Every structure is written in C-alpha cells, then in structure tokens.
Image (cartoon, rainbow, N blue to C red; front, side, top):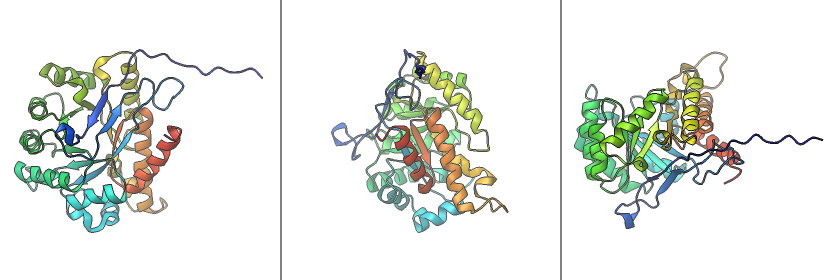
Amino acid sequence: MVEVPIPKEKWTGKIGVLELGASAEKGGSRGKKVLVGGSNGMPFLSYEGTSPNRQVIAGEVMDTTDELPKAVAEFFGDAVKDPVQWAKAWVERYHAEVICLKLLSTNPEEANASPESAAETVKRVLAAVDVPLIVYGCGQEEKDAKTLEAVSNIAPKERLLLGYAEEGHYKSISAASMANDHPLIAFSNLDINLAKQITILLTDFGVKKENIAMDPLMAGLGMGLDYSYSVNERIRLAALMGDGMLQQPMLCDSTASWKSAEASDDIVGYGDAKERGIWWEATTAIAALVSGADILVMRHPGAADIVREALDDLRGGN
C-alpha cells in the first residue's frame, strides 16, 4: 500500500503567552496563575506544532440575573442571587479554572449600580475563590470607564483580565489596566482588520502585547457561527504567518448561543429545551476551540463538561 504523506505547514509565527491571575509572590492572592496561548501551529494539529498551554474554561457569573435563561437559573438555584455563591459553585462544584464576572448592574439605563459598589463585588468574589478573574463592565462606554478604573484600583497586582477595549474607546481602560498591572481584552466585531487595528492602537498607547487577549466576537450556533469561525481561523493563520499584531491569545464568549430561540425556547418537535441549550452552547464552544480559541467563557456547567471531554480528545489526553 502506498503511504500517503500528511501535508504539513511550516509556520514562522507563534501565539504569545498571557498570564492570568497573580499569586502572593507577585503581589496577588490567586492560588495559582493560569497561562494561555503559546501555540506555534493550528489548533490540535500536533504534527505541525506544539500547544504548551491547555485552553481554559471561564465560568460566567453576573451581578444581576435579568438576562439569565431559565434553564441556567434553575440549574444553579439560589446561588445566582449572589455573585460570590455563584462563583464558588463554579469553582468548587464544576471545576472552573477562571471566573468571568460581568458587572451588568452598572448599566445606567437599568440598575445603575455605582462603580464603587461594583468594585466591592469584585473584591468579595476575589476573597471567596482563588482562581483568576475576568471582569467586564456593562458595555456602556462612559460608565465602564469609571467602573473598570474602580475595579483596577481595588485589586492592584491581581492581574484581572479587564474587558473590553475597542476602537473608539480604549484609552480609559488601557490607563486603568496599566496603572495596576492588569491585562485587558481587545474587542473587534467580526473583522480581521479591526482585530489588528485595536492591537495597534493599544500598543501605541503603551499596553504591552503580552497583556492583551483578543476577542473577535464569537457568534452562536444559528446566529452566524460559520462566519465567526472563518474570521477566527484567518486571524490564527495570519498570526502563524508572522503578523505580530494578531498573535495575542484569543478569547471566545460562547454564552451568546443562549440568545438563539432554538437554544432555549419550548418548540414542538425540538426535544427537551434544557438539554438542547446545553448542546447548543457546547457546539458553539467546540467550534470556537477548533478555530483558535485559548479562553472560553461558558454559561452552563453541563456544556462545560462536554467541552472538557472534547478538549481531552482533541489534545490527545493532556
């Protein structure tokens, strides 16, 4: 039988390594730091390159449950009423390596919680769990600037991953991150050129490349997942071909998958909605992994379990 050689690409570029969380010797309080990135080949093609740091799952916690699907709220029970208990559930029961805390209560058009109150929530969660934290504001530019500054100041040296910076509003969050040694998330909207541009703007402003994670926006299954996959893959290919402005580790938030009606609505003939939502999110997250994600933000522990099992297989058990 003729042996068919495996086609192998030779890459000149490499994804940078991002350090999340800081232990006591570096001025933080995390039990251990988490490293992401460092690959020098396309995801899970071990015959082309190495991937020294395993992709990580961040469990989503919000300080308000207004946008939480019923299936997820029922799964966590009373824990969703308090971000501290919610974070502890993720870490102690469902083995999350990172917590992603979204401070949605700061939205000025809704609860309008103060930056100081939001920062205090971050402080409480830091005291309750010892894993690294990702911290998002509410998405309102002016309020996020104040909120993330307060968060940065209340947890200096903890290396919180702050989100997010994008073209048009990045200076305030950059200043907040650099003041207290926090990395930040560079967000772009499904466009490889925008992903590159925000990195250029951040580095010109003074943010070090090793303190940036990129979020190119992960669309959920049924909401443009194929387009997201293509953008992620092109970003990773450009990075491996040597584009230094696209070599930052990639964060993908799979929780958007729950916004699809097919994920959680009771629809005749679609089966159990609770089970369907879990698989909807898991499918979105696995697509993100295969396209290049280093950090996954996930909403349901059942979906996270499915992704961990897939990740074990894709990485050959390590």
